[in-house]
Image 1: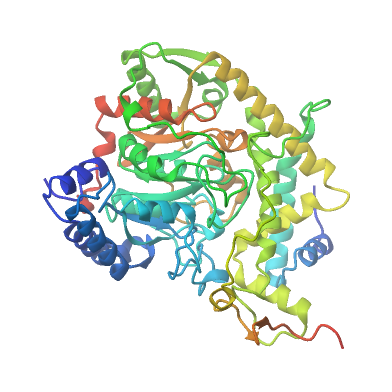
Image 2: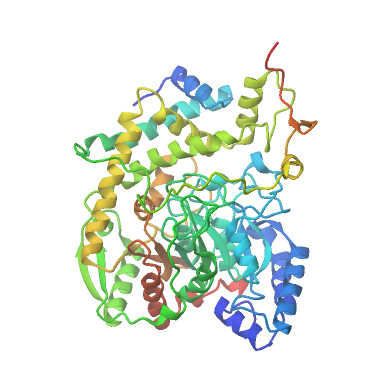
Length: 96
Length: 486
C-alpha cells in the first residue's frame, strides 16, 4: 500500500491533526510502510471466523442501574481547562 | 545488609520488626532519587512531601497495630495513573500541566494498603513505544548501560526498580509494556489477565488490550503487590467480578507435574545467540524443578504483530479523540476557529509516534478500509486467541523469551517504526488473547540482562507467580543490581 501526500492530508483532517510540511513526507513514507506491513493479514484464512472485539466476551461489559453516583465537582475538574467563563468551557465562536 | 538492595518482601519484614521506620525508608529512597535520577531521567515528578506524609501515616498505623503487609513500603507510579493533586502527564506535552482531579483505583488501593508514593515515572508518550524514546520528557536510560534504552513503555518504572530508586513500581501493558522493559533491566514484571486489575483512572491507549500490573525485584514481590491491586471495581466496565486468590499463600505450589509448553513459533525463527542459550538454560532448570516440558504450537501467532498494529492504533485513534484542547490538556495559541483549535492543539500537543498511530488507526477505521484492515485484524485476533485456548488445553503454562534481544542503543531503532514494532513479537500474543504473562530475569548477555517470559491461561496468575518464584528459589539473577546502584 502506497499512500500519496493527498491521502495523508485527508487522514490528518479526519484525525483533526495539523501536520507540518516537513512532517508530511515522513508520515507519507512511514504510514505506507505500516500499511504494507499489516497487509500480510490478507493472506490469513478467516472465512467463517467471527471477529473478536474483546478478550473476555461474556465476562464483563456490565450495565449498571441509571442512578446518580457522582457528586458535582465541576470547579475541580475545570481547574484543568484552558479557558472557562461562568463555569462554561470557552471555545472560538462557532455560530456567526 | 543495605536497605535498598532488599526485595519488597524483605523491606516489609524489616518494617514489621521495626528495624527501620517508614519515614527512614522513604528518606533513604528520596536521597537515592536525589543522587541518581538526573542521569537516568526515570522519574518525571518526585513527591517528597507526599512520600513523607504517607510514611508518617504508615508509622502511625503500625504504632496503633493497624499495619498490613505493605504498610510503609515505598513505591513509584507510572505517570499514566491519575494521582489526585499530582501532575499526571502520561509522557506527553498534551498533559504537561494536567493535575489529575482524582486517584486511579490502583493508586487508591495501594494507598489504602499503606504504601508510600515516591513519585511518578517517565514513560513512552501515552504508552506508545518500546524504548521510552517517545516521551516528551526525554528518554529514560538503562541503569545497566546509560547509552541503552530501558525498554518501554513502562521504561521509567523499570529503571527506578532496577536502580533501586524505588523498591517497586506500577506499570501498564498493552503489547508488552511491563514485560519487555522488565526483561531489558533485569527485574520481574507481571501483566495480569485482562479485567483482573481496574483501569479506572488509567489513561486509555487501546481499551481491549490495556491492563495494569506491577514491576518489582522478585515474583514474590509481584504477588504481594498484585494482591492489593486486583479485584472488582464497579467504576471500570471491563473489571471482572471474580474472587482474588491468595497469591502469596499459593507461591509455594510445587512444579512437580506442571506441564510447561514451548511455543514452536517462539523458537522457530530469529531466536538465536545468547538469548536463545539463556532461555534454553531456563528450560533445563524448569525440568530439574520437576516440570514436564512439551512442545506446542500456535500456528496463527506470526499474525500477532500485524494484528496488533491494526487493533491498537484503531482503539488509540478513538481514545485519544478526547484530547481536543477544550476541556483539559494543551490548547494552541490564538485559534482562528474551532477546527483550527482542534487541529493545532492536537498537532502541537502530540508527539510523532502518537500522531503516527492516530493516523494509522483513523485510516483502518475509515469508510472503505474498515473491512479490509480492522475487521480482518479482529478475525485474526480470534484465530490467535483460539490457538492459545487449544494450547492451554494441553499445558499449564507457556514459556519463551520476552524480547528478541537485550537492551539496544538509544537512537538505534527510532527512525524505523516496523523494526521498533517487532520488539513486541513475543509479548503481543498475551494481550490479544487477554492472558496473564510475566517476565523474570534468566541471565546476562555480556553486561545486559535477558528476560524469560511465562504465559498462563485466563486468571492463572497464581501458577504463573509460583512457577516464577520456584525458578527464583534456585537462581539469583533477580538479585543482581547494576554496580553503580548497589
